[in-house]
Image 1 (cartoon, one colour):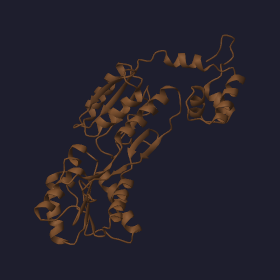
Image 2 (tube, helix red, strand yellow):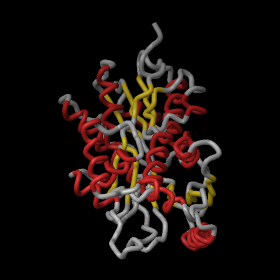
Image 3 (cartoon, one colour):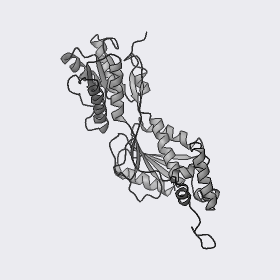
Image 4 (cartoon, rainbow, N blue to C red):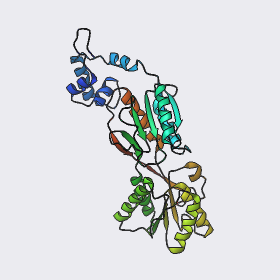
Amino acid sequence: MPSEGGVRSATLSDVARRAGVSIATASKALNGRGDVAPATRQRVVEAADELSFTPNAMARGLLAGRTGTVGLLTSDLEGRFMLPILMGAEDAFGAGQVNVFLCDARGDAIREQHHLKALLSRRVDGIIVVGRQTDPRPSLGQEMPVPVVYAYAPSDDPRDLSFTPDNDGGGRIAVEHLIACGRTRIAHITGDPAYAAAQDRLAGARRALDDAGLELVGEPMFSEWSEHWGRDAAAMLLQRHPDVDAIFCGSDQIARGVLDTARDLGRSVPDDLAVIGYDNWEVLSTNSRPQLTSIDANLQQLGRHAAQRVFDAIDGVDIGEGTHQLPVRLVIRGSTIARR
C-alpha cells in the first residue's frame, strides 16, 4: 500500500526478506511469540526498524473488517471424529474470543455448497473442513476469499493445507506393541477395504512384522466397522488358526466384538490372546472387559493445529500447502498387558 508521499510502505514480506527468514518467523518475532530464537528475533526487529515497518499499524489493518467467527464445515454425521477436532479448535481459538459456526453437510455435495455460501455470507474469517474418513475429499477450490484448512480428510488438491492422522504409523505402533508383549502369531481384522485408513493401518502393521521377521497369520480380514463383524471374524479366525496369540483390530468396535468371541470360546485376554483396537473411543475402550488397549489419533491436537494455521493465515502468514500426517499414540490397557 503506498504511503501519503507515494512511496510504498514496507510489508512483512520485505522485513522477512531483509532478515533472511520466512514470513511466518518474521510474524512470530514481531508479535512476541516465544518460539523464535533471540538472535533471530533481534535480526527481524532490526530489519523492521531499518525499513520503518510498523507492525502495530499492520495489526490494526488486519483486524479491520474481521468478524471474529470461523466456520467448521463437516460431513461427519455421527460426530465421532468431528467433536474432538472441534474441541481442539476451540482450545486454540480461546474461550469466548472466536465464535464457531458448525455446519453438517451430511456427506452431500449440494448441501455442502449451501452451507459454504451461508458461511461466506456471514463473513467468517476462515473455514476448517472436517471429513468423516481419511480418504482425500474434493477441494473447495483456490478462489476462496478466506483461508481454508482441511482436517482428518485431506483435500485432493496438493495446493491446499491438510492435516490427517498418521494411520500407517498407527498400524506400525500397534503391532510393535504386540511384539513387545511377546506375541508372534498376530492376525488382523479390520473394516471396509475401500477406506484409506484400513489400507494404511494394514501397511504399517506389515512393516512392523517385516522388521521383526514375522508374517501376518492368515490374510487380513476386511468387512464393516462393527462389533458384529468383530465377533464373526474372530470366530472364523480362531477356528482356522487356534494358535493365534494376538489380534490387531482396525477399530475399537471390531475389537469389542473380538473380545466377546474370545470370552465365548474360553480364550483368556490378555493371557492367552492379546487384543488391540484403534481410535481410542473411550466409551468403548474403557467399558470393555478387560479394558481395551487402543491407538489414539490425537484428534484434539489435530483440531488445534488446523485452527492455529487458520489464525496464521488470517494474520497474513504463508501457511504452506500439502498433506501433513500428525503422530498418533498408543494407550495401553488390560487387553494386551495383564494386571500384576
